[in-house]
Image (cartoon, rainbow over all chains, first blue to last red; front, side, top):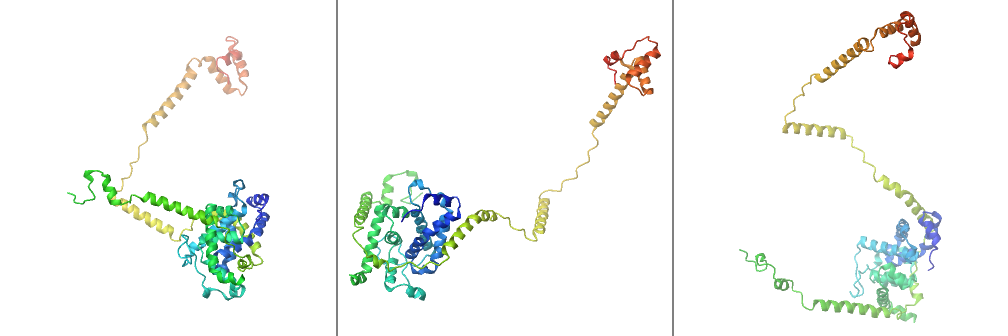
Length: 194
Length: 209
């Protein structure tokens, strides 16, 4: 993803409304998509509210963004998405169950509850999409965030490492584990496609 | 007498007591070191395989993000701007003092009375302070000032400045509503030039007005 131009960032840092709007315009789709794919369908009706909170936090802290550090603004923005999503999961204290047999030392996320799924979502999401949601929900939080940022948002390993505050090696390891788990869970669909 | 086999403070510290109680196995450091490096090796091995598994793009794309409502960008922009504008005001408003309750004055007065009565129990009411008589020093000062004034007046009339000419001059000035030079002239005329009283000399003597 191309980064936002430094002049726009500078203006937004000075409180310029048009520049702030330009940043929101540019980032709102990836931010909402990342939140949705990471948190899962249980948070479907709150996704936009959560995204709004992420933007509020981001703009409250925008003065602290320092381009001289060599970090892209978009990468910096994903850090807010990651932290806010993790906070939400922590606050809600959802009953969680790991699907990967405890191999991963990360905290697993909750399994989607089909009974809690609103009818609207059943209509909008394909059956395969639901299976992917379920498979993603079975990953640990760090694996899932790394996978979403890499496979859906196209971030490079260094940027994911920056967002998650770990080394590139750890990011790659988590991604490999996540792919292995997903391949295993989605095997029937992969075979039918083949 | 302390029968506790573990705590024997009088005997001082013995390293063998610690090692026997904590029970750290002798290979703890080696095993931990080995596990840490095994973990790092595993991470490295998995990291090398990161591109080995490819999940089909079209499969992943089945998980589409939700549709975004029309006014989202506008709504968030307004919220961000509003947050920026109100953050300062909100901070100030958070320091607004609370309104006192209606019975605050009454409660405070009661508390004060209670406190006073409590103090009275502890110490007797102090006696009224006696009214101090007028200070003698002030009286003395007034008398001294009056004496000094009398002395100055007496000196003015009877001392070196109190000569017959001065007396005449003062008398002449008193009866002649004219400048002092005219009074001197009049005085010289009365004295028939015997004293040849001159205004400049008079001024030099300090008698001018």
